[in-house]
Length: 443
Image 1 (cartoon, rainbow, N blue to C red):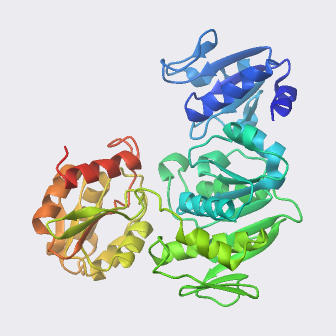
Image 2: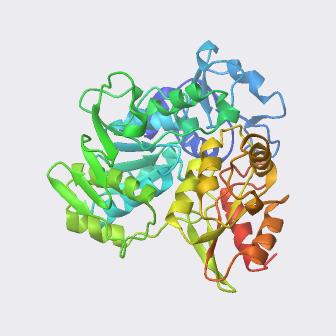
């Protein structure tokens, strides 16, 4: 990896755009090459940077890109104009890493389920004795993996839409779990969001593999071999029928008593993992053992505890309506659900329709989206069943206090916000931690 980076940057003026986790990872490897002519860091935060390295900061930090030959852009930074219109080359450490190791990479994306899917896949492969590493959007930058990779290593890599947006290389094995309306505050239109996601397979080559949900099949031809993953249908290459996965002549029964992942949506992700594991020669016995020993990730329908006979669940990862619907289907004894957060402009029609018929006694709505959902129900949904179930509050702390007052003993209360946390909390993890603290009166 160092030799490839040295060849790329030799004699070049290099800018690291964004100095968060990925920017720091880029600089860590870049300085080992010592091949660049000049290096600088650009970040809006004036506290970013390294001793002896030029720092470009402040509101105009994006105005200096064309002073450089190469710009390593961190995910999520919005450029003032399309990347192709700059005189410099704009790329990312993920793209450079993929150019070096694409043949060994299983790249996974989707609006929801990415982290659980890559974590489960990595765990099962590792438990079965395969040489593998895990990285990407899950929290480990690409360059941090380089020292752990040799020619036989399987690289399991989670990819966000922001990582994919400017990619010009796709992994040998691409996985697209689903696409739902999300990140419209960044992309403006659903079409642009979908276009970013589709870079997971757009640059594949003949002989590559593309595992794709039937919910979001591409409209045209794909260079890689398309492996459709179906849910309750009979013509896909991998099928989930209830709790049975069918993959060619292989069949695997998901045992709910030994599987830590709850809910049909998680079973569907398990079907993807099973199909990929079949490609790597994992036996059903190895798959079953790995699945049973897997530990679920925090904030994904995580059981928090029981207080006064009420079970509390943290589903703070929920940032769209569909995930809240899935949470309520998974926990049919839910008496109270907490919904609301930052408003990204997504449509909540399906969620409102589901809530109208759901056997949930109390729907506590908070923050920007909670207020919008409440107003939409009152104005545009005259047939919404049980409006008296709606409770409008300002913030999460108040929502938990009201939930404690109204939730019936022997039932569940679930935080499943269907909204982003930004502007209110640092991230969904902080929101989930706050929920648990409020439940146990720790703050």
